[in-house]
Length: 100
Image (cartoon, rainbow, N blue to C red; front, side, top):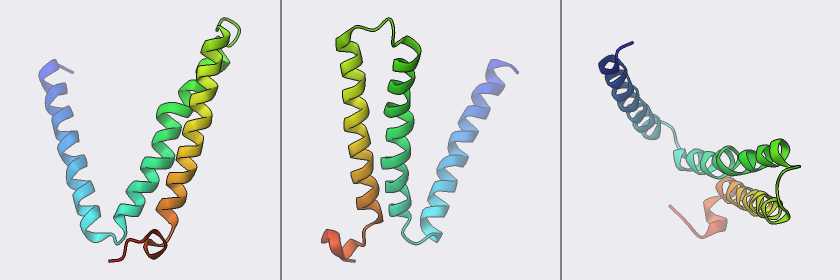
């Protein structure tokens, strides 16, 4: 695939993704909860918790104590934030003081 074709395909995929998200947001009730759940649970897991865990698993023997401590700190803090975000995304809005 040429660079031009790849660039056009990338732009088309981005535009289609945005259109799909907008259409889903219009037709699905409580789409904000779905996005909050995905943001809190999936993004913390994929972007922070798993990479830190893999870093510890792969390079654990070669890491210094500070590096291991930092990885474990990030895993613990991001796990707590993912749990809090997931709970707040699943709670009724009336309990959070956000009434529609």
